[in-house]
Length: 463
Image (cartoon, rainbow, N blue to C red):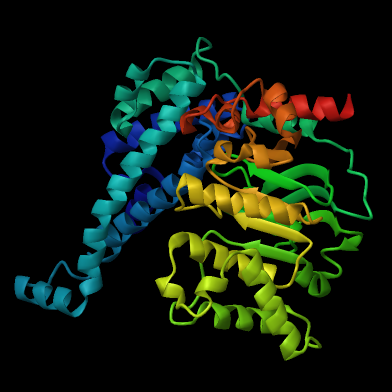
């Protein structure tokens, strides 16, 4: 029974001595009140792992909290195994017998070694979470000296939790309510030509709970428009693109030239070209063979071999690949490889063309030439959507810009869709990079104005 009690103490309190248990009881009491102040259930403070995760939500550091909680539980389980289960039955072993057992069971040694990186990770992520709490309570950074370890962390936990003097600047539940208020009930008018997107939400299950990745994105993109897609890290740009091209379905209606991308996905695959950032081509193939293989895969089955070759030659003319058609892919320059990867997707003559950082690794001149070619393609009536991290050097070639922003609930929202000049006026920023900075969170080097612009755009749309 003593061993069972010891195991329970290790799991609940992370310790077995009276002093450490007393410290943890006080820390739990402080965290209980901190959770309540942030609008959460206080009893989460009693559950190891859940305590750290819920505290990270109060700190606005939920992603860090996932790691923090998993590592904490892992360390507690290792402590139980090494301090309680392993010693059972081995007290009577001699030193030679102990050595022989460790040689036969190397996993015991591995567990002992694994404690070190786990403890370091717990320490680092604990600092990140408590640093977030310091910010939420509007306190000076010197408070962090007390937040480094549990023995001193109990002081700010009790003070912030029980003193009326310390109040969080926002509550977790308030954020949800605010985001509900920002929710838009409108839809974009469905067009017979062009791309119509009415996305209510795109969800995923993360860390045992439903997480909304994208929400309330409605827009119409006319044919012949070249559109820039902006947003900071985690704003949902790739998730949005996967939703509109049908690769990852959302709670949405996406129509391209009147055809539903979801219900007619198999047929519509030929209407969408997607060029990822990474180039997936066989280096030992020639340019022309690479494109001929792409034509076999992407063109309808009833297209003859002669027609496929004609289409390949046409695409090579468009992207200037005729002079290197017999060269091996691995011998091409960076710009030529980019044009080839785009040509592969353009073989099927898609109505919607999506490119993820097509100018990655290219200098200014080569990037400019590439975007000018995309502009010519858009002028033929195609819709082109591009993600690029250096938009300002080619911004004059775009018609519109989509700005996605990560709100306080870490959900990707539409902060703006419209003309380039309209975006400058809306955000009161001169460059696209400044616009991205304005909606990025402060801890990511931004201005932290995502919620403001999401609300502003919603009011403009429905005002």
